[in-house]
Amino acid sequence: MFTTLVALFALAGPPVATEAQLRKSLEVIATDAHEGRMTLSPGIMKTSQYFADGFQKLGLKPGGDDGTYFHHFEITAGQRPTANNFLTIKGNDGKSMMLNLDTDFRPLAGSAMRLTSGDLVYVGFGLAEDDWNDYLDTDVADKVVIALRGVPEGRRNASNSVKARVAKEKGAAAILFVGPSAPGRSDLPTYSRLQGITASMDMVAGGVSEKYFKTLTGMSFAEARSAKKPASKALPFSARMVFETEVNAGKDRNVIGILPGNDPVLKDEYIIIGGHHDHLGYADTGSRTGVDALHPGADDNGSGAVGVLALAQHFAKTKGNRRTIIFQLYSAEEVGLRGSDAWCRDNPEILAKTSAMLNMDMIGTVRRNNVYGYGTSSSAQWEEVGKQLKVDGLNVVWRPNTRGDSDQASFVRRNVPVIFWHTGLTNTYHSEADTIDTINFAGMVKVLEAVAQTARIIDSFNSKMTFNPSVERGNRPEDRQVPPPLLKAA
Image: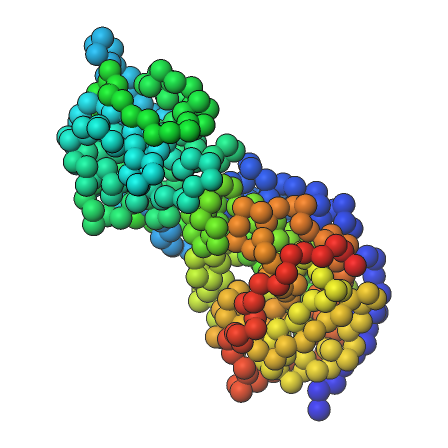
């Protein structure tokens, strides 16, 4: 018989978090400075350092490699430039400009890798459609064409790859895309396949900063983008270039902090509270809109990540936990649960002593006072947890299936009981519109209270939770339905 000890730790304590506390953290990681937190990017490294610093301030023990808060793992994500890139532009007056990689220019993913040179020809938006042909009466054979990213206002989008193919068919030697595709977007294309070109077309392609546009064309960038008809002209410049990219391989990192337990025996068992802190960058992967703007990821999963930090702060203050609690922030979730899977792979001895894993992913958009708790079939003891858990103004909707689309799946595969806390998909999911102003902070506070209560109830059990081998794994069709637009907080 599974017994419980309803301890003071399970019943009382200060509020888990405040709305102001959560907002303050989210305003750090879901803003431009963290660049959308793409795997292996400077932005995700900055984000992981933010959480490591937070764990250190709380006095949590480092749970990573070599006495740090970082658990490192090897990964590949997208493309990166090699040291063999250069772009020089020479005017007919003999003066040359040598552009700087990643500041002034960038090779496109999929670009052919060879020395290329030619006279420059401006081709407007680089379209060749029946009612908008930028190549009409323009000879671009063996030339380097300069094209604006994006399309004229009101027209259907055309990708960089589509424009590069048109230039190739017209005989161009290379194509250079200039400036952002729309105001407020990234000046240079990212190294993602989405903003690159198809490698099989064997075309040389790169991006150039907007700041060179007027020098090259004699027009302002704004004037060119507002053009009402096709435009093209030969330019008094030539270009010489080599573009080269390679697979972006490196070490990413999870953030791990440990709050030791107080019971002489149960301190050797674990409760894991986690959530991923990475996102999509500038639509580098997984974007539903394909818009090359910053994807802030306020809900996905800034909400769960700052929730982990808030719970760490709460439990570090209450200090009543009998079992050891491990707080975890995973990277590379958006490219296949790679961070959580790596941690599980490297720590089988901890998993063998883990009572349960509680994962928070997208907990910031509570609607109709509902939060979903997926994974109740992973242990018979979740029924007892459900009986005890109560948060005023919050309906916990329990679901038996564990789902396979967030980090709890890495733990289910290792026979660890899980609950995946989730407030549902939204119309802003995986888009540039997943911003802080969509977050229901009052609802988040309630969800965190539910997660904290769950951890306390688990900790009150005198025995380790048992995994159910007949667990219902994976997703159901209704799990990924995007609901109507967000309602105001209830």
